[in-house]
Length: 377
Ligand SMILES: NC(=O)c1ccc[n+]([C@@H]2O[C@H](COP(=O)([O-])OP(=O)(O)OC[C@H]3O[C@@H](n4cnc5c(N)ncnc54)[C@H](O)[C@@H]3O)[C@@H](O)[C@H]2O)c1
Ligand SMILES: [Zn+2]
Ligand SMILES: [Zn+2]
Image (cartoon, rainbow, N blue to C red; front, side):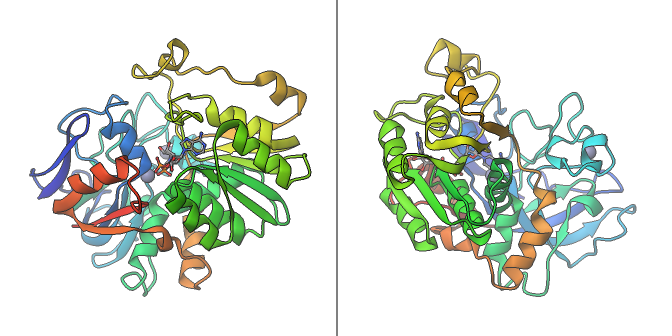
């Protein structure tokens, strides 16, 4: 089969590799029909993780089931399924609680597994023609009859739509409240979409890319074209000096300060400053325990100069982490099915798998009008 291989920093290519196959009776084999490039892939693409050369990328996958193992009961050949990027077993202590982003079985020794992802277990990615899905009965979200017609919406259930939703959940957002979202990449835009669906009274989206901010405005959010202190001031001005009820971090450890230089504390400290006293902050952008490529000694150790004094003084709360996709994907699929959510609106490019390298290059450069790239194997 053809698959997108990580050759090293800034170097991916489509190569012929052995076909994915059923290994355990609980596996399913999927013919991948759509697979996305994610901002998380870019941390790996830029060589800023321990992702091993020669591995297959791709954790945002959907497709059609072409074979099931002898122990699979629910999922049937022919079903169209969307796969959460996190692989859960369904029976560990965390999966039992719905915390499938922290499965204790699928990546022994650590909490959390994913397809084609650094430090998330041996599972190959789905930027390929075929994908092996472990614990298939648990992981496959079987899609309704409009699976093919709304495929580009449903594939967003693999990660970014639930992740954006998760950001607003972690922040504690309720109808009628205000929220500031840092980052207008796919995750930030999905957080904005989620906040608007949930009935937020005001949604502010912070970034410096006009094309991405234009999408946020089209959704009904208010664009804040600034970063750092300037962004904070604009948000304070728009909220009578109080700040927003809630804030979402949708950028991650490679966030930049107003000079365009990496500063891993930039968004978190802005969030403390632009969120009101007693407000809630949800951080879904990825932060890592070790970052040898970090810009400071602290950053190299996964630490940051966090404005804890103001955070404490304001009595704010902070919740973080991987999205437990399965906790949300069924309900969000219903919103898509009934026409109440359309996450595909942020897709800018639909490319063939063969053109993946081109997709990585432009998306990584945050080139104008390269907001979300999906691949069609
Ligand atoms: N928690 C999860 O489960 C989960 C799932 C998917 C993605 N992620 C992470 O979410 C993050 C965002 O993903 P994405 O696909 O949207 O990535 P992206 O890189 O396309 O978007 C990030 C955006 O943040 C902007 N930005 C940079 N510095 C900023 C600042 N100081 N203030 C405001 N905006 C700033 C950039 O201009 C860019 O548009 C990544 O870290 C990704 O790994 C987490
Ligand atoms: Zn992703
Ligand atoms: Zn588990």
